[in-house]
Length: 496
Image (cartoon, rainbow, N blue to C red; front, side, top):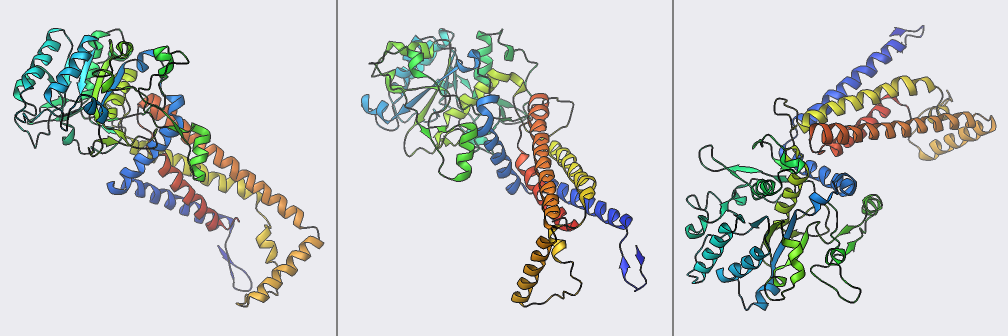
C-alpha cells in the first residue's frame, strides 16, 4: 500500500493479492469448521437426503442388474385379504403361520425369514402345530430365521421358548438406534456383554452362501460388526408377466405397479434424469393368500431356492419404511430384503459411512473435507488467475465513471444518472466491449461450475463408492458450501 500526493491511500497489486488469499483461506477454514462441528441433528438429515437423492437419480445405472442378485429373494406379505380368506382375525393364530410355512417349505426355499415377533403364547392352542412345522423345516434342512424381541423388553428369550429351539434368532430390530431410517442398517447388534447377534439380512446371506458357495460375494474374510451398512435401494421393477409367462388373456395380479410423476419443478427435473418412481419395490412380492387360499402352482418358481422374507402389510401397524425409490411408505420387511440383496451383490464390500479397509480410518466426513478443500482451492484459483486477466471496466463500473456524480438518496436522480450514462456508453459504442467482457466472465463461471460438478461426481462415484465403498452422503453439503463461497467471493472482489 502507498499514499498519493493528495494523501489518499492506494491499494497496490500485492496488497490486493494478500487480502484476496487471506479471505480465501479464512473461507476454507470456516467451511471446514461448519462440516467438522455440525451437530448430528442437522448432519444426519442432510446425509440421508443427499444419499436419497443420489439413489433416486443413479440407482437405475449403478445398481448391479445381474441374475444372481435379482433372483435371490422374494417377499411374502400377510395382508388383510390373507386373514379374511382364512377366517382369521388380528393377531392371526399360530395355526395360520403354520399353514403358510408349510406351503413355503413344500417349495424348498433356501431360507425363510420371519420379520415379525413370536413372543406371546396368547393361550393359543395351535402353538404346538407351529412348533411341529418349525421342527419339520429344521429336519428338511430349511433354516427359519426369526426376529428377536428387543433386548430391553425381552432380555431372557426374545421368542417363545418352545419355538426358539427350532429357529435361528436374529438381533432385535427395536434395539436399533435408527430404526426409522431407510438407509442405516446394523448388520449385527450387541446383546449383553460383548455378545453380538447377526441381523436378519446377514444370517440369511450366510445361509444363502452355504447353498451357493461359488457366488462371488460369498468369498469374504468376515464382517466388521462396527461397520453399519447404508442400504442402496434398487429402482428395478419386477416383470411379473415374463416371470410367470402369462398369456395376453391371463393376468396374475400379485401386486400392481404404477408410475408416479412429480408435480414440482425440481421433481420433474429429477424424473427426467432418473425416470418416474414406481409404487413397487424391486423384490418379487406375493400376497400370502396366493399361498394359502388362492393356491397357484406357478408361485413355486418364486420360492424354490430363494430366501423368502415374510412380513405384514396391515393398516394400523406402524412397521414401514420410506425408500427414495417409491413415492409412499412400504412394509418394513423390505429393508431386510434390500439389505440382503446388497450383501448378495457386494458381500462385505457393502456401502457404509467408513471405508471398507479396516486398517484405514477414512470416513465420509474426511472425504467431504478433502473434496471441499480441493474444490474451493480450484475455485479461488480460477477467480484469481482467470477472472483477474479479464479485469477492467465492467458494466457496473462503467456506469459510475462520471467524477461529477455524487451519491444521493433521491431515487429519481439516481435513475436519471444511470439512464444518461447508459445512453452515453451506447453512443460511444463502448457498450459492446463491456457486454463482451460480461459474456466472457459468464462463460468462465459456467465452465467452472461444470468442472466443479465433474470433480464432485468423480470423487463420489469413483473414489468413494467403487474404491473405498463409502456411501456418497456429502455432496449436497459440498455443493451448498461451494455455492456460498462462490457468491461471497464474487462480492468480496467486486467482480460483478
